[in-house]
Picture 1 (cartoon, rainbow, N blue to C red):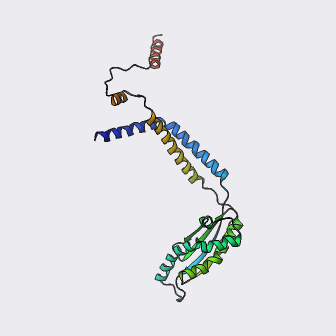
Picture 2: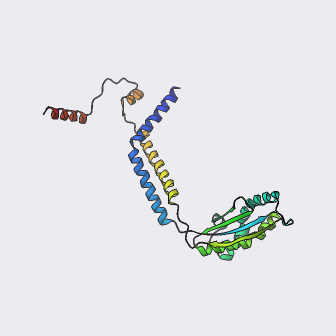
Picture 3: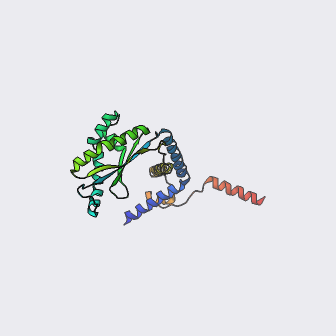
Length: 239
């Protein structure tokens, strides 16, 4: 119990020490956030998005779409996502377009997600130039459907929406960047001042002397500056 109380007291002292450095913590946090955003804006290369949509059907024998068939098709979207990101699909695309990317690198540029929990899945490709992004997306629409049909051994995959892309690059999210770097600056500044506090082995208060040396404090010598200020104040009042 005694050790726990001492630990809680030490944490309290640490928090008070950090509160005394609030001004510096805020300044460091703002400085890191500004520098981080500036570096991100200057070094981040523009990225372009190309998109297309496919529909996956788990069964082609029945013309009507039942609830069970819809649920099965929705589950197949996850399977199709894994297949689109596989070497079987990506390597022919890399070779056909003569891309400098590896299969893993190209897979990180591709995202596939279901549209409103339906059988339709949207493919998004991000790349450094819009024409390459569109070419990769078009090749996915060409290479992926037969591989998916052959792999799942049932159903069909058809294009719902052809390749489309904007000529404007994706803008950097300034808000999220500021939050990330501000959090980083806050943690670094708190860690720095906490380390300085813990490494400081000087006596700051009477309590430090009693706790460390287990000796009574007989008296406290006042600060010279405070005494001189009091004398000057008293002289001013007398005059």
